[in-house]
Length: 210
Image (tube, rainbow, N blue to C red; front, top):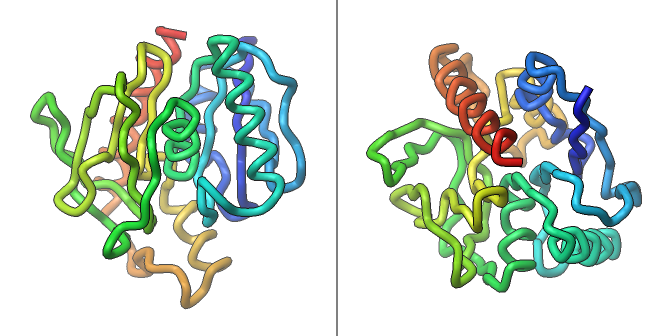
């Protein structure tokens, strides 16, 4: 079975719908908890980087270790699919910038893609990305222009969270309690289904390029 490294940064932010995609495709996910000091060896192996409640250009010592690990992987040509914090780390490693937004972006947000597609997605972030010079902007929202970008065929960054399904949101709300801005009322399952359909197509395209 093909294998794929997945870097998790927080106990309440697991692979979610990515695990469903991987199981359906016969892909083994090797999950590493960077916040516990777990990182695979530096290599050109493909990796998915998840999000987390940390500043991408500051944060704890283990995050600096991950920044160095990511830089080493990129030098070896590693493909990366990066989400939220992961997308910010990827942008920084490729020469971009991350800055604090005037207002955080949370809950269900409509994202507009350059191909004309629109999708309602879940967000929870306070920082925005200034893209690396060679990156292509693929999607934006009203409040945050840099919602999705591509830096070559195998490096993709998403500011939103397509991996969060209803179970993911329940875990986040339980863990963060009143700090969580995510919806607590039952959400139309069609919204989660639409995001999952998009995620499957997008991951399939990335995995094929890998």
